[in-house]
Amino acid sequence: MPHRRDAATAARRPGEHGGRGYRRLVGRPTSGRPETTAHEEPPLSEQPEDAGDDGTAAAAAPVRRPRTRLLALLAVTVFLADLASKLLVVATVDRGENVRLLGGLLYLTHARNTGAAFSFAEGFTVVFTLIAAVVVVVIVRTARRLFSTGWAVALGLVLGGAVGNLVDRVFRDPGFLRGGVVDFVSVFAPDGEVYPIFNVADSAIVCGGLLGAVLALRGIEFDGSRARDRGDDAVSRG
Image 1 (cartoon, helix red, strand yellow):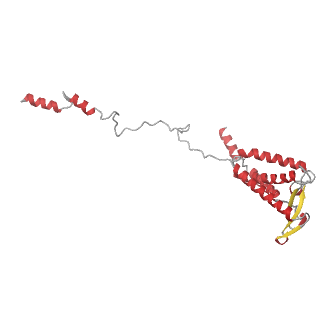
Image 2 (cartoon, rainbow, N blue to C red):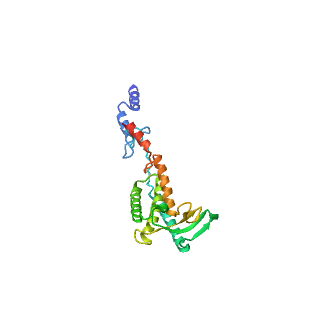
Image 3 (tube, rainbow, N blue to C red):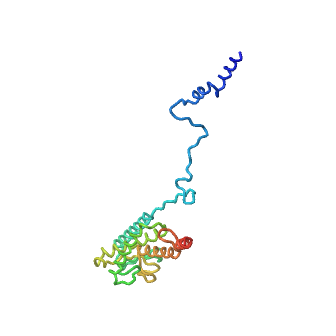
């Protein structure tokens, strides 16, 4: 009897005699994949992939787009408005004729200008034509690095006005590069007695120039940054 009780006790203990076979049976996996426990987690890297030099995650910088489309859209709008108004005046108003509008506040006066805007420096038509062509080329080249909305509006106005007057100088009488620009707006009195006669292109050029001057005085660059901020960054880095 003592021998049978000892044998039964040994069979129940997994660590003695038959325990080795019991552990093999229990520890055998049921599939081809190794067993994993519920508390196991995938290893983590020490730093995230987009971490900066100090180990913190770097915030994604917003992607800025050039304001080329805004500049082009505004320039085309100004050019078409200028061209349409000039064609209408040439077709309906004779040279020297004055059409009174708004109770004398505004007059339509068909005139030809061979000088700069507002009939300034007449007789230098070729010079101003070449200057206008250079301005157009410079603005077009600048448009690729233009990120400021304000500068896009300013340069778009200047570009549209410059192209509008340039077309007149190239295609109108008396000849190539010497054509007279069609002016037709006279304020407060006919024939430019109070203020020089102008057109849509002249107005756009003046408005764009004034806006550009304001932006330059505020230190706003073509890329939208401020000159003062750049100076502060340079001092802090130094």
